[in-house]
Image (tube, rainbow, N blue to C red; front, side, top):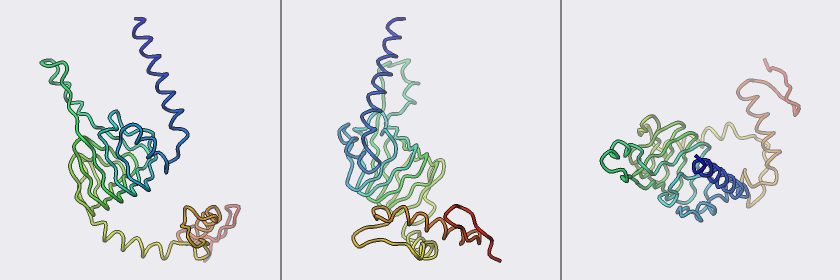
Length: 212
């Protein structure tokens, strides 16, 4: 019994040390942390989750990949349990590969032995069990290709022309996220979208009046 108690305490201590270590990284610098764990991670990535699963050394992520909150990397096959009555040591593993310029949306589950091709988007809540071709939009349980990233890009550009705040300020060499006007631009975006979707001229305090 004491053995089990000490094991739980050790696990809790390791977890606390892990959380303390990763707390010093943000979404844009976590790639460095995960590289130290053996993961292959490219440049210019945005990674929100605090872990890449129990086998991060079986994860390969390309350049300019964004991974949203609560994405799960599962590199081992828990179904091996049914074989352990014959071989108690049996385990099954597989890599997870994400190529350049992909979007892995919130709550996606990535299972072993999958390869997501470049320029692909995986929709929120999807479970990826097979390879996803490059330039694809895939979603569902299991994830299936439902569209083309190229078509989405064209549509997104047209939508942004309407939704971007006309008074936004971005200095040369910066973008929306790195501009020194980021907070002001977010407020301009809020006012613009409220007017666009709800027909309300809102002030900085969040109030507003309907425009008939």
